Amino acid sequence: LIRLSTARARLLLKNQVEGEDADRAIFLFNEMLNNSGVDVNTGKVDIGVLQGRPRSEVSKLSTFMDTLKSLEGEPKNPVPEQEFVDELVKSEKFKDEDEARRYIRKLINEASIYESTPGHYNTV
Image (tube, rainbow, N blue to C red):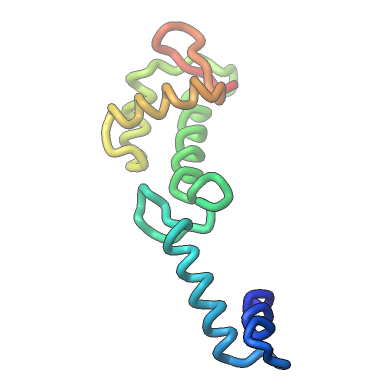
């Protein structure tokens, strides 16, 4: 914001940065966030969008991995799909079973989890 304020003051050939320069910099920053920093899932401004993953996605991923790890247990037993999906829906981060299954497929494609046997999942 300081750089934007200073740049505006220089553009207007001022020797000092004034309050209106700072106000305009804040306005520009807010407009940038509203245009490109909005999480499509929540509709709210989220700076995480600019870094690659919105906060809602990070939270969903964290819940997903924590649930899988807790169901696996210490010897890393394969987790049946239906049990896993039921737990994900109970967490309320996933609205229904279809969304949970799509997320499972997505993380398999990203190699974050794997299907150890048909219909059973483990962490990598």
